[in-house]
Image (cartoon, rainbow, N blue to C red; front, side, top):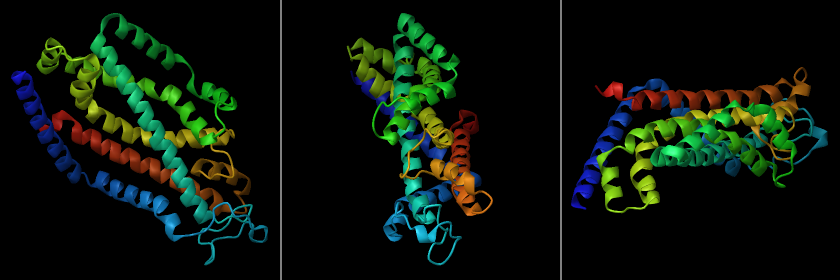
Amino acid sequence: MQEIEIQEIEKKKEASTYFKKVIERLKKDKLAMVSLFFLILIFLFVIVGPIVYRIDPNQIKLNEVLQPPSRLHPLGTDENGRDELARLMYGGRISLLISFAVTFITGLIGAFIGIFAAYKKGFVDLTLMRINEIMMTIPEFPILVVAAKIRIVPSSILKLIIILVIFGWVGIARIVRGEALSVVEEQYVEAAKAIGASDMRIIFKHILPNTFHILIVWSTLRLGGVILSEASLSFFGLGVQPPTASWGNMLINAQTYIWNAQWLVFIPGFMIFITVLLFNFVGDGLRNAMDPKFFR
């Protein structure tokens, strides 16, 4: 028992040193830090913005249809006279909510499946990985389109989250399994088994924390991908349904007015582009900072 506690203390010290080095290296990555700064600004824009800019994003004003940016409407109005800036803020909330929810749930499911497969090995590992491979061979987007047509739940946001989770766990499950295979061979895991610790305790206390670095990098890169997926489904009318705004449906609804109201296309399109790009830059920075070869 004391030996396990000593090993855990040593492991925590190693982890603490490791993450200190990661933070130090990340601070030296100017592109990642600048990207992180602008991401924080975007979060403040969509979270704090509506508190300051108190305009109803769904208020229809037919006498103010398709107005260009002005003092009264800084980003103009849409085809129903709704304030574009207000809709951009609230739409950003929805897009980021979906992105974080899908990433969190898929990461949780994928990590558990990957760790459980690596821990149990044998038949369980073989079965879970065969299911994983079958899921990877299925063409994802056509299935998502069909699933989106089915009325699973009344809320289009919740339905979209469920649909994107269906296939989202597959990749991270295999990645985490690869890392967990080496962790389960560690002495402290074997010692925990020897004293009769339950499988769930070993998985959540000893193995999962040692795969966090992979989950963090994957999550950062995945966040941008979910935003693009939501926009893609919106193109087929399967994303967040009006009048609720999201960056995806704002962009798709504006395509009709690309020649006479360009701001309706440019503004949500730019927000999608820059947010995805920033997530990718931060993800690349984290991946480089967490790569062990940089600590030699």
